[in-house]
Image 1 (cartoon, helix red, strand yellow):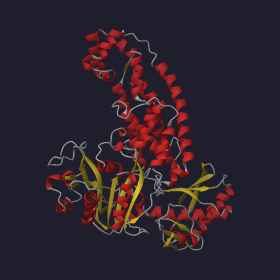
Image 2 (cartoon, rainbow, N blue to C red):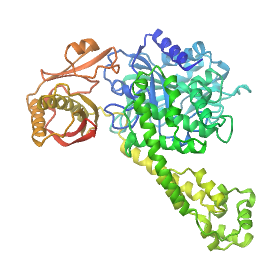
Image 3 (cartoon, helix red, strand yellow):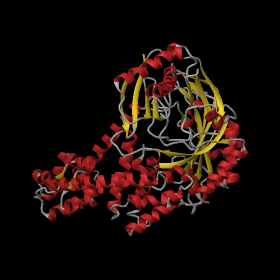
Image 4 (cartoon, one colour):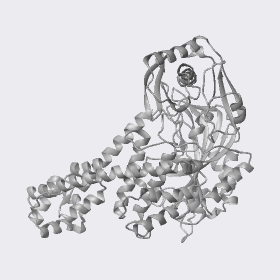
Amino acid sequence: MNRKQLIKKYIDFFKSKDHKEIKNSSLVPENDPTVLFTTAGMHPLVPFLLGESHPQGKKLTNVQRCVRTGDIDEVGNARHHTFFEMLGNWSLGDYWKKEAIELSFEFATKILGFSMERIAVTVFAGNKDAPRDTEAAEIWESLGVPKERIVFLEDNWWGPAGETGPCGPDTELFYWMPNDKPAPKDFDSNDEENWVEIWNDVLMQYNKNKKGKYVEAPQKNIDNGRGLERILAVVNRVEDNYLTDCWQPIIKKIEKLSGQDYNNDNLRNYIRIVADHIKAAVFMIADGVVPSNTEQGYVLRRLIRRAVRYCHVLGLKESTGKIAEPVFKIYDDYEILEKNKKKIIEELEKEEARFEKILEEGLAKAKKIFSKKISIDKERMMKLRTAGGKTVEKVKEVLENKKKGKKYALDKFKISEKEIDDSLITKEEAFYLYQSFGFPKSMMLDFAIERDLLIDSAGFKKELKKHQELSRTASAGKFKSGLADNSEATAKLHTATHLLNQALRVVLEKPDLHQRGSNITSERLRFDFNFDRKLTPEEKQAVEDLVNKKIQEAIPVTMEELSVDEAKKAGAQGIFDDKYEEKVKVYTIGDFSKEICAGPHVANTSELGKFKIKKEGSSSAGVRRIKGILE
């Protein structure tokens, strides 16, 4: 089975169960400051999981493009990917636990033909906040899953995404992957190599309130997400996701350009990293991200540069654009890729060229760092390196503890402290080359071997881990509010954004002015719009005054659900491309503003307070950005 066949089977199955297919949304979440990228199919549905009514109804399904950056360093094994597609189905207050589990089971066994002999599940074990989910376990058992294959885990809990909101137990389906041995009778959930998680049914049963209490949710939701790449590997009985048609054309291209073989155990992981990172970069650029030193742009830059580094290991140069070519063929069902193909190739090649210059500079720096005066003769250095079966990569384990390491070297090989210090590339020097110029550890080890130097490999690993922890902490702090914030403050700023959008058209006398992006938190709004010059102080004041005038007029805010054609005929603002569903929500503010939006909004403009523009500046060529607050 190939990728497109699997998607069709999935969507057709849930359509036959009265689910409506919804659009595949952008990788850059709209009006969600809490995450850099769409990491799951449920991201675009957050307002509806929180209680907003969805124009397409209560039962939904789709395939959603996603990016996860938390485990970039794990990419290279058989199952981790930065970019992936998630198959999803949702019940927004409609069917519940029994029906959700039965649908999952039916699709697995009847549609995909998964063997019952290879299936196992996990369910929530219970804790002080919520009871053991015996109901889910009993449903699985009634479908024929034996008790030995049903494991209760306290980790089987999802959410809330922020400090408050919907949450609940989840139940995961696992599949025994090895083709050469039968599945054991008992299920060991820790055996991740053989038992692979295929998908997860999140059972949003509770709401966590501001007091930290978990209460039964008025709207119980089902959120089922399943990684397409993993399922495709299982269906095709391959233990390596990269052997499916989602990856093979890219891998074949890398093999052809480099002359290397994917079956080479020493190079396979590098080929996977290049294929993964280039594919992710193609999709990010298609969704409007460009390489930079902040937020989404920083992640994109890191992916491209990491791919370039491993291209060098494979003997490739000036190749990112060529490696990207098969991605457009594999995913020719994404119009956004072909539409932006020229821009995507240009951005990849520009960033590769930038990084090549940095690498040249880095090589010059590395030459200086690695030109230490070596005072340990080759014979003693070789003995030290191979002591106890150690390789150069492991040598710092001998020297890890300064006193113990130096004493060991002194006693056994008659090496002085000065000789060790003279011949050692320190952790600070190694990390400088990594952070500033992207030198992979393998490249630095090669330099050390060539020049008969030692390298503080263990110290470098500690520095790298410290750096990664700081990055994760910073991200957690920045995005700690969760997936979305439907607070009263956020609803007010959503409505203020609509007023700002129309006020700009009126004051600047530009009816074709449109939103080019927005980002709303509970503290401020950020609004991007097409305009080719800086606003004058008088224009900014006029925009601000018009918004406040409409607030003072106490205008009712109404909502109606219309088809896209009806919304267009009614004069609703929006970029009428393929981003919208069959039905959309249109919010109207008197005779001043009419705009397509998922919400949330206030009932009357009088609730907003006073609007203030804090900053106006350039976002990109031909696009301006306003940041505003409500006082």
